[in-house]
Length: 79
Image 1 (cartoon, one colour):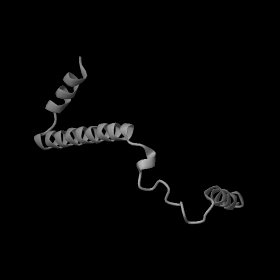
Image 2: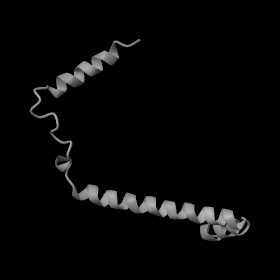
Image 3: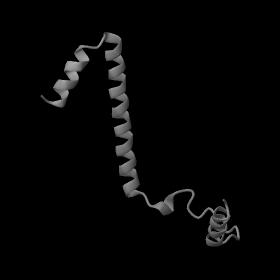
Image 4: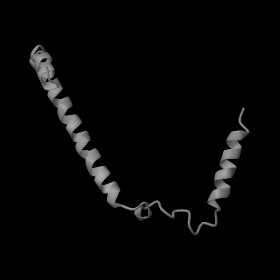
């Protein structure tokens, strides 16, 4: 028995309102899949350097590596 046949068999036993809920869920999953495919495609063609956050610390006079080490040191001192 295929997955679709199994789904249909179980779906036939549900009341109509549950069948509608199941349809809504399936449409939701399709929407998530569509978004994931667009994000993957867009991410593959887009550079990280083109992201608006890239270089946001530039010109602020902050050494990012020293800042990171200071933050880590604070956590190392925690009990």
